[in-house]
Length: 132
Image (cartoon, rainbow, N blue to C red):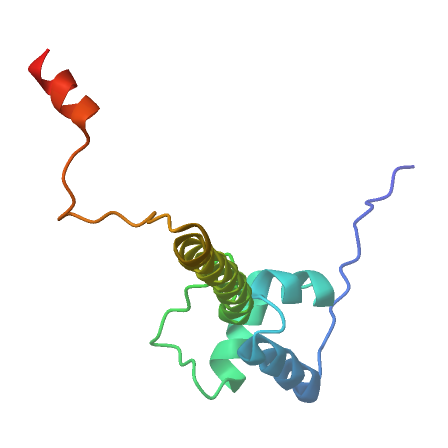
């Protein structure tokens, strides 16, 4: 005799406090909708419903568009990039100061003028090359 076998669906009910806690994590940027749905093992649509219901900022008439990177992680990446660029500019400025000091020392110690002066006449060899 064959019996009808059906999979028993478990219906889980989440407390209102847990839902609000999940929405707070989303609003703070700690977790994305996809991360929340995996964490609580519910569909992402359920998470969106929680957001529409409990969020202070998101209402049903406003569509939520989530980027691949959350805004807080973007800010952290951009701040790191700024710090890296500021360091590079600082290193370049040190190099410029060093080279300017070397030019000044060459002029003082060896009487060599490395900086280009536009008022000085051209050398004799350069005039011969122009004529050829």
